Image (tube, rainbow, N blue to C red; front, side):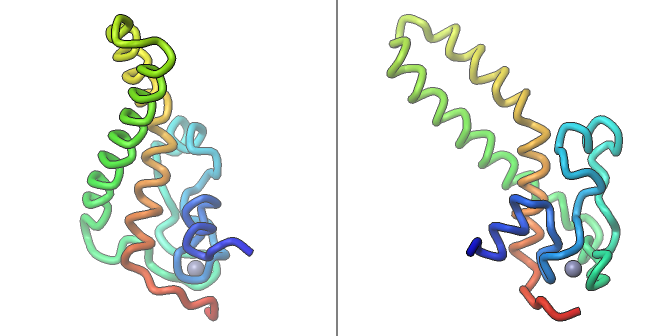
Length: 125
Ligand SMILES: [Zn+2]
């Protein structure tokens, strides 16, 4: 059985009940393209107001930064082992493109991780 916090983060679910969706579209790329990254204001199941206080999601920037740095470090070590130090310009380009390509997923995960830090689990509506 999957951890309820992990389930909420990975499957776009309400951090409180784990049933209602957080983002309007489940696909992070389509959500950014068509919904401009918007999310539901309240959970459709337990009616939890997602923005607990004004500006709550500014803090998700820290999570987003950590995720991007983590991805960059992982790719740096991976490509240094594969290509060696001589290809550092290619490695920098690969890392930059990867961070750009994964930014919708990063946006998606960072908001859900940040929200899960502040909402207590309670499966009953
Ligand atoms: Zn809910």
